Structures are given as C-alpha cells and as structure tokens.
Length: 248
Image (cartoon, rainbow, N blue to C red; front, side):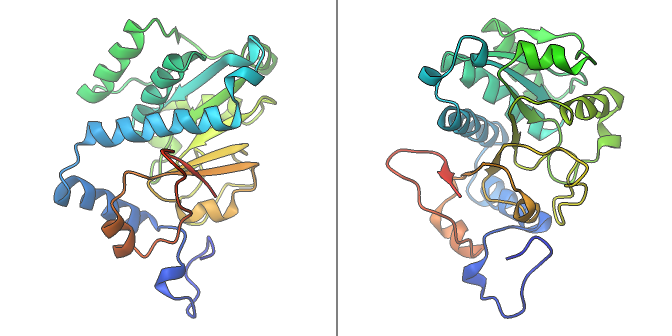
C-alpha cells in the first residue's frame, strides 16, 4: 500500500499500513472487545518504544554523553507513551530527561508523570532555543509530541515551538507512531517537518509511514492478537524470540 491510498488491484492481505480510521477502529477493538485498558496499551507501547531505542542505540556502544536522552512529550496519548518510554529508558540505565511543556489534566498522564518524578527523571522547565545547547547536552531525542490526528494548534504554543526547535537538531531523532506534525494519511508536511532517523509505529504503521525515509523503522505491536491482525488484513514482519518490536 502506498502512503496516498490503496491500489485498486491490491488484495487486502497485502496491506502494510492503516488509515487513521482503521487505526482508531483497531484500538476500539482492543479496548472494547478484548478488554485491554487504556493504561495497559500506553504501557505496552511505551515499553516497546524504549526497547526500539535500545536496538538502534545499544548502551554498551554509547559514550556517557550519548546515553542522555531528551524525551519531548505532548498532552495527548502520544505524550503518555513518551512518559512510559522515558521511565523504561531509565530502567534500562539510559539517562532520560523529559520536556513536557503542556501538561495534561488527565489522571493517567498525572500518574505517569509522578512515576517519572519518583524515579528521579528530571523535567526541563523550558527548552533552550539555542539548538547547539541541546545538541551538546543530549545523545538523542524522542519525539512524543503529537500523535495521529492531533494538530500542532490543538496542543498550544510551547509544543509548537518545541517542534520548530526539533527540526533544527543534528542529533538523532526517534519519533513515536508518526513524526509529529505529519498528516497521518498523506505524510503532508514531511518535507518541511521533522525528519526522524527512527520511526516506531505503534500497533501498526500508519499510511504516512510510506514516506518515512529514515534509517530504522520498527513496529511495536506484538500485543495485537492474531485475529485482529487478520481482521485488518495486516502483512507485517514476524517478531523474533521474545522481542516486542520488529524491524520493517
């Protein structure tokens, strides 16, 4: 499947990407039919995102400075996944710092924030506008600002300004689910938007992933039951051993 839509000659079994509507339907299936909890899904996705980071940036190969990770979180569900990702990176002995400028009043976000604070993960009060300061201070950045269907205008000025800064960084960028600011269907703004080195598609890749040209693309969806994969006619690589992510 191309990022612009389905090929009329394509059989359902050949689909690799989900539309925004299909992704929402898959999530509803997990929540309503399979009785997953929202916190459970966020935890599974955040843990898998952290594992994907370890695949590309294995700790033994990193210098002390390269172990520092800046995780930029928005107030919607992708931000919650980012908070979980930061916590697991801390467990994996990386050195995460979180920038979470527009904090959600949602209880799940508050609980996840408390967990990070209790684990002594620092939170930045502001993001330096001087890009070189960020390049010098961190080994990589995790983009968990916007998810599918969330526009920059919906999350406020601090997140919008953070995205403008992330576009200018020279250190590696890892985007969760979709690169923030991209249209989830068409990949619109891909040319002028974020250009991540790594994309971690949550549950299944969204259509815009067809325009991703970075070095590594993972899918974090081992928790999706086989029946659900078949229902949505997804053709994705198998998972190896006990891995919770698969390289695409």
